[in-house]
Image (cartoon, rainbow, N blue to C red):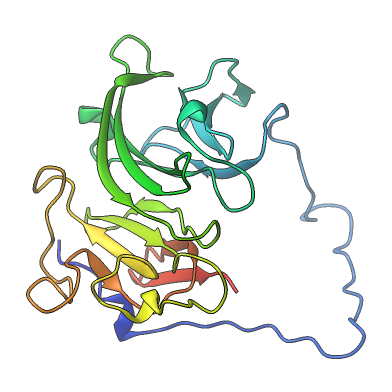
Length: 250
């Protein structure tokens, strides 16, 4: 499959500006078709990401900022964590266990990837494998580091790992923090900070630089896919078009 167009070839920006006194927005009418909130689970601690393996309709996996991944199976929160890396991480503010992503061939290889900040606040992207004995538990001994990136400040850590429609792993990296990107990292091509990264975790050990990355054969870091970002906390691919939408915080 050919890769999607590089993020720097297009942009989509939605702005909502409010001036003066906010106008009250009426609630939808009650009855058939009305919107309503329904609780999905209780007993979670700082949940900040929800995902599931492709084709798995029975379970949802909830990432807790404090370092645990919990399983909702048929709507029931299982007591044991799928993975617990709380002893490895720093948490609070914008730090912690920030996301997970299942490999497109998870059903065959059992691989999934996590993004967290360690005790020093630096970013780790790591691969684990599901336990052979229990599909609701990770094999903690299968740990493999994919990326390690030093963070100069406590904020703007990005944090999302997500497989794209091209099978590549995308990693959102903030500009390193503080305010106003004081070291201009987001605009420096050979820095991994302030970027969206794109790597091939199946093409090398621990990864290969995929074709199409703009700096693969030019000056700059080969992993970089898009530059000039502040804190790409979340992003998503639009299925019909393949366009990439980035929530660049701030």
